[in-house]
Length: 168
Length: 168
DNA sequence: CTAATCCCTAGTTTTTTACTTGGTTTATGT
DNA sequence: ACATAAACCAAGTAAAAAACTAGGGATTAG
Image 1 (cartoon, rainbow over the protein chains, first blue to last red):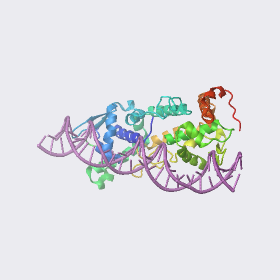
Image 2: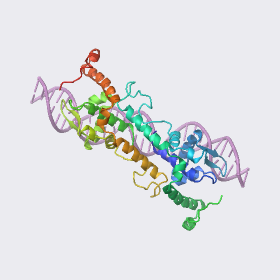
Image 3: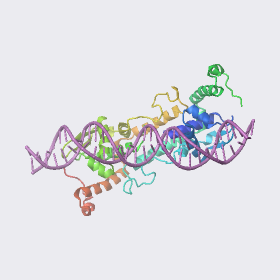
Image 4: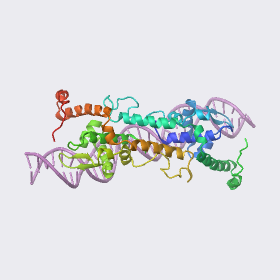
């Protein structure tokens, strides 16, 4: 399990989708603005998420991305593996040929660590995350900003903030 | 806790030192050959290890590096932190200002993961590692090769392998 | 038909990692 | 005293990876 900002972007984006489940599909443009990341870079990440069966995209106006599975069936580990194709922490990538074709001194250590990290992230699903109170809190704050950006009238945002139900 | 090849190099090198404790100090040249890594790069890593109080170097012929503390007082986490100065997994580095000065959606997730990784690696000392049978095994194999390189006579290596005590 | 959206490929820039060069300083043995 | 083996140091360069850009399609709702 490799951990980079790439994986972080992907998880945050997927969580974004998760939080909007049941509404209209989420556009990458939307996520790009929200997460302050380039649209094209996001497209590349989502290409991998799609190929790994984690999201489904629908084209055309009103289109966007939706999760391809239930919230509880998408683990954080699966998201990170999808975007960060290379898998583990060991130099050799699971093969035990790190040093002159033999195991290096610390092979087992890194293998164990990889496993721990994987188990941790595999034990957490998008469903788990969206149920966390602190995530809901942050999500609501962002929803407010998002509404403001869509309407283009930032002045009214704070007023509307309490009555968030979102038409469409 | 950031995990890169840098940290791996450092841990392997420290383990190398640990395995030779009590003998003469280990030269970087020695480690460089053993680990197939450039001498100067190693020097840079050891500069940080020294500044962090993990090793002591002695100059001049017969010099080299020794551990600055007891085996059981050096955790793997401390080694990795020493060479990879930046600490954690979150984008913001512990500050919760990942997004427009506020916590991003996944802040807690990465913070938790960081903690798990840290705890795991902090719970393992060099002492623990050198006592592992598989490490001892690999170490012996390498010792054989090392002796061979020093003497320049690879033929006799296997014979000497069992009676390893090293003068000095 | 048009615009919004996904989809795809091939770049470029930036950052990080790994390495190189070319020293200086300190201790040892002859 | 001198040569040598080592740590120490600084400034660069090369290579790889991460992050982003550009510029096109292809689909589909309206």
